[in-house]
Amino acid sequence: MLGRPSKSIEPAVARQRRAFTLIELALVVAIIAALIALLLPALRGARRAANAVVCQSNLKQIGMGIRAYLDEQGDGPEVFLDLHPRNRRFADRWNAMVLLDPFLSGPPDSGVFACPEARGASSVLDPMVRLDMERRAGKFQVFDFDGDGVEEYTEYWFNDSLAGTYRDLFGDAAKNPAKPLGVSGQDLSRLEHRDAIVWAADAVDWIPRHEGRTNLLLGDESVEVRSLRPPDYLLYEARDFWGAPGPFYNWGHFYPDRYGP
Image (cartoon, rainbow, N blue to C red; front, top):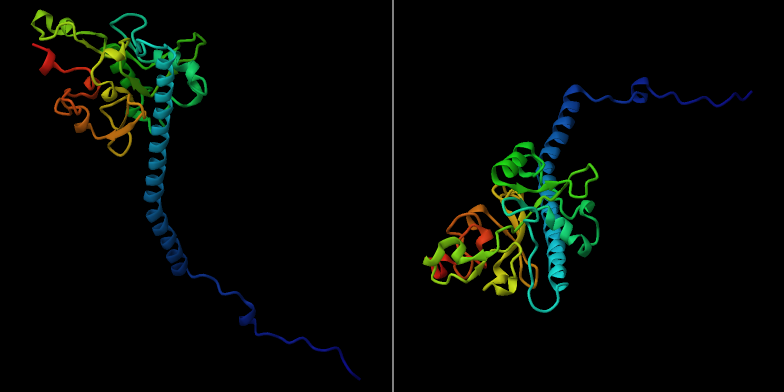
């Protein structure tokens, strides 16, 4: 009499799955940790590089907005943004957001005025930075200009050097007293080297945001953005191509060696 086929019986040891030992598990964890340690700096570097590109793109858009603002004035004078709308004692850099609003693709809070690397002491929203700028230097980056209870802000600085002449600085001792200088509210067509003028830059310019570098927007026809280290734009020795002394906000319009006393 034929019986039912019998099942092959595997040894119990073969049926059991071999478990990881603690040493093997620790080795796997160590390998994963080492890979993360190797990858994180590269990821951080990639993120910072991407943020630098976003910042430069923002400045490019702002530059095209300023260019459109100047073109709107038609033939003749090309008057730069007025950064002293309340009075000459206050540098209201936020007013650039108001003046450029019709010439940019989005409203002031759309992100074009926000640098992705602005955080902590490199941001105009930092309480101590804001106190230092506003109360001690009279420079305002943050302001509720539309009165809706929410403060607008720009993480970019705009050239607020006052329009004037060499007589305003040096009196009758100036070699050319009537020679114009300054950028805010100035007719740029009267200035010698307008292509060297810095229109805008990362706001807290003494604290570079991008791997020790600061982005500067030059007012040339190509709306060039230059990335420089502090010694190349903050020191007196940091001169433009025609000899204007640093800091960078003097470039293109301030030549005391030629027109001063």
